[in-house]
Figure 1 (cartoon, helix red, strand yellow):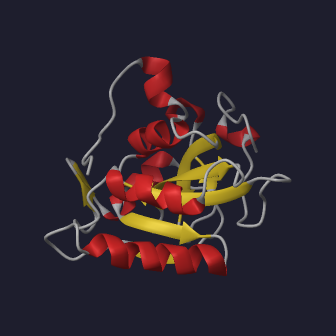
Figure 2 (figure 1 turned 60 degrees about the horizontal axis):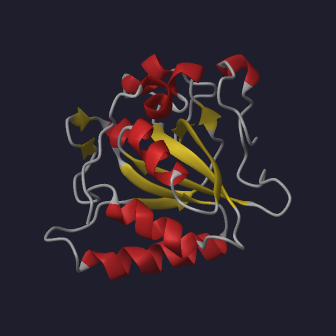
Length: 180
């Protein structure tokens, strides 16, 4: 799973919630356009990899065009592989809240649609507990109710190769909605 950058979609297999490499853990976040989400998670010490992709919907092997249509139910998301001895899941949650607006349903900045929803896809009961506690703690920081969904992680489908490390490869900026 580590080092998928540059693989075309046919080479990047789906990732199931329990597929973490030995000694590492997985976390999955949706916070708008995945390019910016991938970029800020890659900068977090202790994060081994971040992969842009699709999750939370019903269609297997979705394409970018299918997800953008809104018909798949998938969100643009980032699968974060991290070393829990170097960074805590709580810290990843802090970064998640800090880098987007969790009060706008199905929207981040100029991006509108269910694929841009705010979501934490939890990989186990402990992540679920921490995500829900974190949501409650952050609620006081926003003037509107947080609409972020906390849902069980499902199959994660890596996005096409041209989406991976987009900001790093192209030098183009990515959407960063908030920096609380």
